[in-house]
Every structure is written in C-alpha cells, then in structure tokens.
Image (cartoon, rainbow, N blue to C red):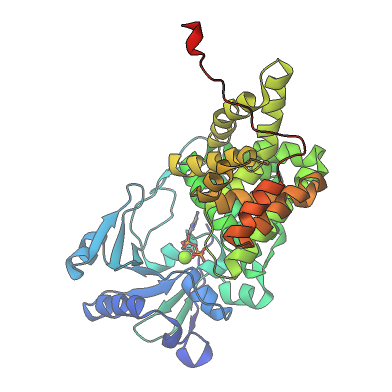
Amino acid sequence: MPKPNQHIIPRDQHSVSREFISENALKVLYRLHKDGYQAFLVGGGVRDILLGLRPKDFDIATNATPEEVKKLFRNCRIIGRRFRLAHILYGRDIIEVATFRAHCDDNIKQRNDGMIVRDNVYGTVEEDAIRRDFTVNALYYNIADFSIHDYCGGLADLAKRQLKMIGDPVERYKEDPVRMLRAVRLGCKLNLTIEDNTAKPINDMAYLLEGIPAARLWEEYKKMFLAGRAQRTFNQLKSFGLLEYLFPQTSKHIIHNDDFAEFVALALENTDRRVNEDKSINPAFLLAVMLWQSLMQRTDKLVNKGMHFNDAFYKSFNPTINEQSQTISIMKRYAVVMQDIWALQLRLKFNFGKRVWSVLDHPRFRAGYDFLVLRAEVDPSLKPLADWWTEFQEASREQRIKMINQNKPKGQKRRPRKRKSRASH
Ligand code: ATP
Ligand code: MG
C-alpha cells in the first residue's frame, strides 16, 4: 500500500459545515471527543456534503474500541463478526461507529486468491484511510477542530469528479470484489467518472463476484437498484461485464429479446421515478420483471412437453427464483411477493363476475396491475386488458358492475349447474 500523504484542511478552507450533519451524528462525535477519543465523520457523509448532496447516512471513525464506545452510550449495540462495529441507536436512526482499522500485510489474512477473510486489527486514522476503497471515501472530518484530513488525495479527485481506487485496483478488487460494484454504483449515484486504472481491470475480474455470498449481493442489489439510479447502474453493470454475474438469467435474455430488454428498461425507469418521487417500492417488483422472460421460457418448455399452460406457469415459479438466489439471495418474504405478482398476471386476464372483485381485493393487486401495464407497453395485444383495469379502478360501483357485464364475451352464457336427478337414485 502507498504511504499516505497527510493533508489537513482547516475549517475556513472547506465547505463541510455542522449544519449539514445530523443531530445524532454530532451527538456521537461530541461525546467521543469529550471523553478524550479521536472522532471523525468519514465516508459518504463527508463526500456527499462536499458534493453538495444530502448524505444517506453518517459513518463515524474513532480510536475508541467498540467496547469503549459501548461504555459511553447506553443505546449502543455491538455488531459484526468480521468487523466489530458499534451501532448507536436513536429510534430508527442508526449511527455506525467503526474503530480505525489497519490494512497491512501482517494483520490481514488473505486466501490464496487474495480475498481478505479477516481484517479486524485496529490502527491509526492514517492506516484507516488507506484500507478504504476510493479516495473520495477516505476524507475525515475532525470534530476536534472541524478540519478535514485528506490522506489519499480525495479532495483533488472530487474536484476532478473522479472515482479513484486507493492503491492498486487489481489487488483491491482481489481483496474484495464487491468494490467493483461499489465503483459502478457510486459512479452512477454521484455522477463521477471511474478513473481509467480503476475501471480497466473490472471486465476481466468480474468473474470474482462468483465468490461473494448471495446474502451480501442482496444488500448490494438494494443499494444499486433502489436508490434512484437503477437504469444507469444497470447499463453500466452490463458494459463492465458485471451484470451476468448478478443476474445471469436476465443478462442472457436481454441479448436475444429486444422486447424483454425494453420491458426491463421501462421497469428500471419506473423504479427510479418512484424513488425520486419518494414513493414506496418493493425490491421484489423489479426482480419479478428481471426474471419474467426466464419464467416464460421455463413455462414454454413444460407446455411443449404437454403440460397445461397454467400448471406449467405455476410450476416454473420456484426454479426461476431458486436459480436467481444462487447469486443474489431472495428472502422468502420477497419471493412470495414475486409469486403473487406473477400469479396475478393470469388472474388479471378477463375474469368475470365475482372473480373480478376478488382480484381487486388481492393485497398485491396494485403491483400486479402495474406489472401488467408495463407488459402492455411492450406487447400491444395486452393494451386493451391493461386499459380495462385502469378504467375499472377509476369507475363507480355501478359503472364497474356494468363493465363486468359488458365484458362477457358475446354468446357466453352461464353454464347451467348440473342438477342431481333424484330419479336416478
Ligand atoms: P453510501 O452513500 O451508499 O452510504 P458510502 O461510501 O458511505 O456510500 P458505505 O457502505 O456506507 O458506503 O461505507 C462507508 C465507508 O466505508 C465508505 O465510504 C468507504 O470508506 C468504506 N467502505 C465501505 N465498503 C468498503 C469496501 N468494500 N472496501 C473498502 N472500504 C469500504
Ligand atoms: Mg454511508
């Protein structure tokens, strides 16, 4: 690792003001400082304020050990096995406090492939800086004198609007391949260009994602796709060759099927719009879209073997979700939502009489309907059905009854109930 260049920028020469830092984060910083510990705001918190953005969360770095932090705060919980971190809880707001960690060869255990499996040795603030990923993430705001400590040239890179890996990118990706995803995600989120040497190795190293636990990739999936930059991130992941290791099924189908690619693109755009309008989003919806073509293909295969379409369709739910879960684990509660959305695609097909009401009452109706509307955008034959449901939702009860009756195809009559003939007994 390179020797860090210490660089301290006094308060009057930078734009990080306490008014941009959350009250709870300030409380934690002050408390640590009052007790004689070093306390810095670090990572996204400092970076985003310097970029004029509102930070998503505030991370704090200190020389106090997690146990020492716990002694200072009643509302503190120690978490993590690989890295022990202190979480200070203020209702739903969590302030993460990490003890400075060192990144030197004696302290970390690496597997043969270079991946770090243990690195929990405490260090100094300088050492803490160089084990971070990008230079812009290694800026420290010191609560003692409100200065910024820049050990890795992060301020210069921010000015150039570039995301640059600290140290040798190839080594750093080997240590933790998720950094490739972070490069793409942060580049898209912050509108930063990924510096050439940081970007270059990604294509060849993308396969290293195979070694990342599916549960960790689920966390990354949420950060990449539910933060208002899904469309851009998706396209970048594709061009860096990372997409196929995250969504192998989606990645395969978008190459051969333009309509499906368009369907996914529309869903990504929609998700971004909803996030940016502060509307709720369920992580399952996008997954249901991404796996739709694979579900259809599985269904077709079973139908070709002679199975009834509906049976084939339902039977394909689990294998489709399970295959995706090999790379990004999908928790049961999300898998259930995906299945509901898919099942509703059948139930939304013209149903008559009482069934329409039960579809409308389905707890996932809205998601199922949104899914249908998206499908209709790439498949015009579905447009009348989607429009019917749009109109139906806006209609009064009387109009709805009329719509249901009008909707009966000509000539269709209720099948007469079979009466048991008493005479036959
Ligand atoms: P966000 O705005 O999404 O929170 P962030 O950069 O703050 O972005 P976090 O996941 O909150 O991301 O991480 C906080 C800090 O921890 C980062 O800024 C970086 O300094 C460090 N960090 C996180 N993940 C890694 C990693 N895989 N390797 C090295 N450093 C990391
Ligand atoms: Mg953060």
